[in-house]
Image 1 (cartoon, rainbow, N blue to C red):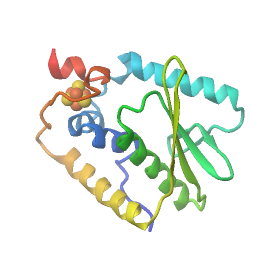
Image 2: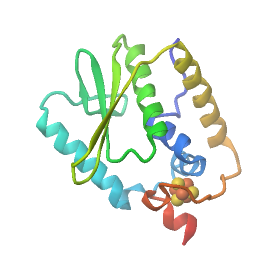
Image 3: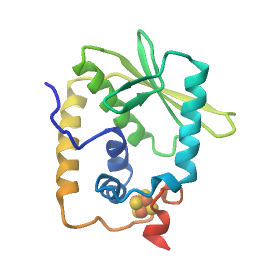
Image 4: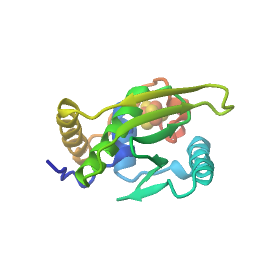
Length: 169
Ligand code: SF4
């Protein structure tokens, strides 16, 4: 079954698992991301990786993916602080590819800034995760339509979030 959740993308799914307020603010375009140093670092990692592996970066429906091989779709994250969010973001990309007839496993690589540590997690999309993805996408759409902005609650990752000043200062 193909997904019809047109407002939802991988970043929103990541934010939904990390923080519903972050998901709401980003989804409703209160977008302060461009000023965030960490977002810039993330982009820089993407760019370096893309240069190292010519012709392997692909873009489908606004999804920029680091690497697609015969077996894996690899997504690189700059820290493993929120593994759950990163996993569901990648499941979402696997589902988009599957809808296009490209069936792959997911490989989530967590890479620290100083590159001393790298952790890899392998994901396989199954029926249960596809059902859960459908449910999450519906919930995100409902959240974005709501008049109420979820409250700011301090959690791991707030200091790295683009909305930190907006939430707490
Ligand atoms: S700073 Fe914290 S509470 Fe505010 S949007 Fe970001 S993650 Fe959520």
